[in-house]
Image 1 (cartoon, one colour):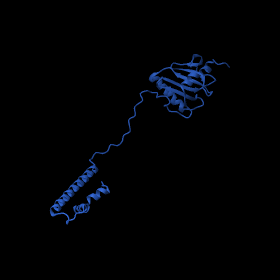
Image 2: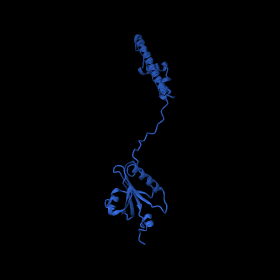
Image 3: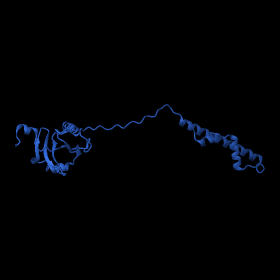
Image 4: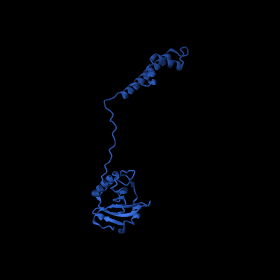
Length: 209
């Protein structure tokens, strides 16, 4: 590794140039100093020169020590391990959204169904109830509220949400929106309302002609 320019300049100095610099600095004059003092001063300058070179050598050795690779490769940065989500349903708003599927507020759905009263019920199954209501923007919808909680209910919600948010067909009801909250264990799917009744009602002839 290369040392900086200042370090190179220090190492290129020899004893004669350093001693000359000290002599010029202190402006030695042999005529004004007796021989004994001159000898003592020259000895002092020689000692200072040796100390300077000793310090300079130690600095250079220390810099070389820092630059030498010691065979320990730097560990490549690893991506932090993301904690696994133990719950099948993520917190509200974190499910994948599509351009045609929006996240609905629970209060809006609660008010539209009058707190999910029985009079708004369209039907009921083993794991869910379906309510008829109108959203604040005037859209008539059917809200499917999952009854079963825990992992089974969460898996059912995720499967149905994932399929209907990606599949679009004229014979399939459209998924308008959804609400999901891990804290309140509420999973709701909002479909477009089919005004002509269900297939079961048509097959059984329960609809008026």
